[in-house]
Image 1 (cartoon, rainbow, N blue to C red):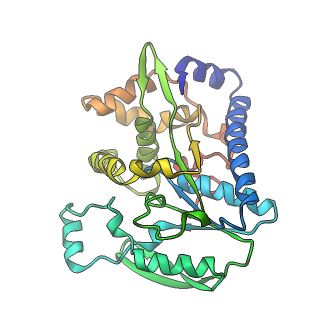
Image 2 (image 1 turned 120 degrees about the vertical axis):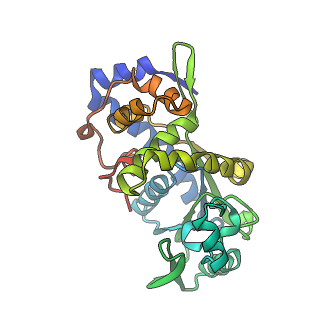
Length: 306
């Protein structure tokens, strides 16, 4: 799907509040349809696997669906696949320090432990939920217990959630969701690829909440893209539901965070490509974006931010 930048600018400069509401409503309506179908099949498919590349809006989409299901009276729990990483060995810590560890690899997931927990969850047995301490590269337990009752649902979100080598669980007992930006923004015959929109999301999020400079995020970008092509894209065909997480006004929201730095980095081809679009993008004030917007996953102050 394509959308002209002029159409976006017209919406943002005309009646920004109404435009943002209409875009958000369309996205929520799409998720509502998925949540309704998931609810219908909840007895045979109580495990929902949600995957997508970095910057696709996985976390917010999962929590939105959880909220919709909860509001239907179906208790739903969302778990992050990141918490099932294997603790790093001393050798892996050395590789990580040298920037030689493949952070996107599915081998980082402790498959046996994950399978054990998913099986127990499916069988309505209590499990001690793990948390992964990224600073210490270690698995910790804070006392959280999940004891799924019959009819309750569990969403597992993460980049490898559709990989059958990682999720060793019967297909017939899972619903599968793939989320990513699919829409291209066009201007004067040129297109801004969805991967660049996801990169804008990551640049803003990393700067605001991970204390990571634009330069550092860009240095990681090629490795992240390589990982997506090797480890994520090959399994998107397995999805039961396919979701485009593009929000038409989003680059207008990112523009104020990106412009000054982009102008200083315009000699970088990838930055120049995004800058050419942002130079012609109408900015959107933060106050126009409600806390239930998916965009808040990247700019903050959202009701679904963890």
